[in-house]
Image 1: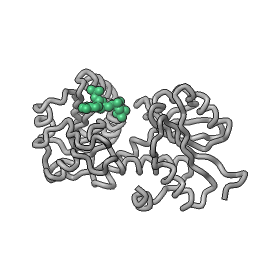
Image 2 (image 1 turned 60 degrees about the vertical axis):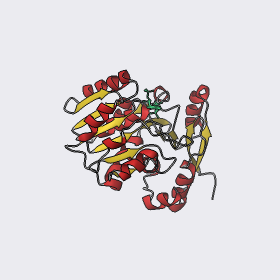
Image 3 (image 1 turned 90 degrees about the vertical axis):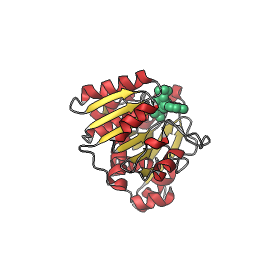
Image 4 (image 1 turned 180 degrees about the vertical axis):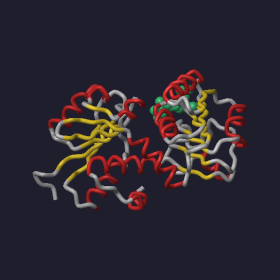
Length: 281
Ligand code: ATR
């Protein structure tokens, strides 16, 4: 029941399209019988500052932040968790009595997905990441924090791969990290002795579902866990090929789910049941 004590949770982004977050979070609110409502707010970039002030003014307990605000929201907050600051992106804001603190649950979300849905162990392993945008940034920091042994970052624009790899190396000198281009040789060379491949590019995303990426199918092998952060379609062309090659596969839906669970925990202290959310997805 909505009453004078009901508090808001929400999502800010632009454009929002068909976000599943309201469905998931409101299910959990109901499950725990909490006095919250989760709504989606389409906030244009020019209105971001006003929206952040509204979080304070309306006493909104917290929001998820999505594209294109994840980076630009940082200077508008009172405090930012060190890792989110390193990454330069915030996807969750918690309002503690008017003080806004930024977090990035994409990291804990990705880590949990790999560990819980594929029993992946990071120590001593090698990963290949494709793409060098915001999603790749978060993925790389996740792997570094989890103490993976080696990362090879491949990107269409080589310079961006080298830059990002250089930045990670500065933070994590003990991890072997290098950047390169999307050449067939690089795919074979780098995937050969890898345990994990994470595709962070939008290639294969609906409506261009038959776009076969960025990858040499024959370079895929059964020793790999292949993760595609695209969640629509459920199984991208890359994941189909990976399955054919005998690799384990994970789609982006799990990531959506786990980062949402981590956000919900930050706001309410309660942990939504993964299986319930999986049913909704
Ligand atoms: P996000 O924040 O979601 O990661 P982004 O910052 O736009 O999105 O990054 C998208 C990444 O996918 C980039 O690394 C991009 O490569 P470039 O750096 O060369 O632009 C990569 N990408 C997008 N479309 C691609 C395609 N058709 N083939 C290969 N890489 C692609």
